[in-house]
Image 1 (tube, rainbow, N blue to C red):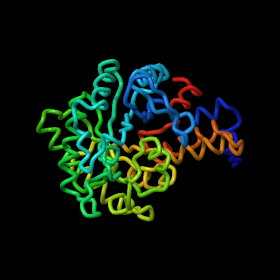
Image 2: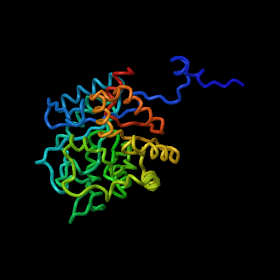
Image 3: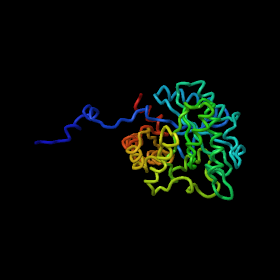
Image 4: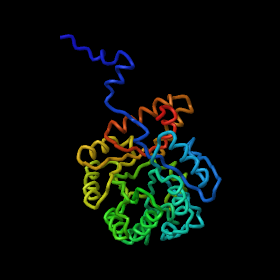
Amino acid sequence: MNIRPRRNRKSAAIRDLVQETQVTTDDFIFPLFLLEGTDAKVEVDSMPGIYRLGIEVMLKEIETCLKLGIKAFDVFPVVPEHYKDQTATRCYDEGFFYQKALKRIKQEFPEACIMTDVALDPYSSDGHDGIVVDGKIVNDRTLEVLGKQALSQAACGIDIIGPSDMMDGRVGYIREVLDENGYTDVSIMSYTAKYASAFYGPFRDALDSAPKSGDKKTYQMNPANQQEALIEADLDTDEGADFLMVKPALAYLDVIKLLKDHYSLPIAAYNVSGEYSMLKAAGEKGWLDYERVMQESLLSIKRAGADIILTYHAKEFAQLNGR
């Protein structure tokens, strides 16, 4: 028998017919950085092509992206230093510029899916995801603030809450707070396997949210551990998560597959800032074909099992590939 696999590779049309994995704009959540004010647009130095945006500019950006087929957005606030304190009180202030902006976005684009981040680091003078007492991040006291933060965001009409703090029990706590206050339709995308990674640097530049002391290794996961992700996923599933997320994506494709193989919930993967920036830098140097490696990287995340990809490449991918 003359078995020749190359027969199924002999033309673009046949290759398309037998292609196993497809990436489309339907897979994406596009992270956006919100500045206080209206018309500001400031590029993130360590993330070429990514900008911090005032609300009026952000509304135009979302409109452009919707026309390209991107339907979901994760909005992060850039909180000026003078608003920060040790207990992150601004994170649940209904009059804060972030909450006002979320309401505007949902009013202007009710068809868009808007996700928000639940963690204290953008608002904390300590730069940690939880409250710091005597040099330690205290878990249960932090949960109370996270619940207030999630409730404040839900009141703005957002669609998905994204707890990224990695405190124990936060998914169940937030779910209970949301349900008790009538927000049973607000989804939770848990940062289930969020690793203490070195790939977050450019994101922390964008938000000016790096820890002022110490690191995040007492609450974010050890990059060496895979089975621990199953423990976290079991807990998040039992506590009421609607999606399970792996962060970062490219260095943790095995963990994406592990969760996909063991859970029926949709699996999300965050293609993080450092993963974005290193491709951009190599492309600008001419060392790699940026457009090709960008699309290949996204394909690898989808092939590993991600149903949803949070990625800074979303707009460029949409412009290259159409709807």
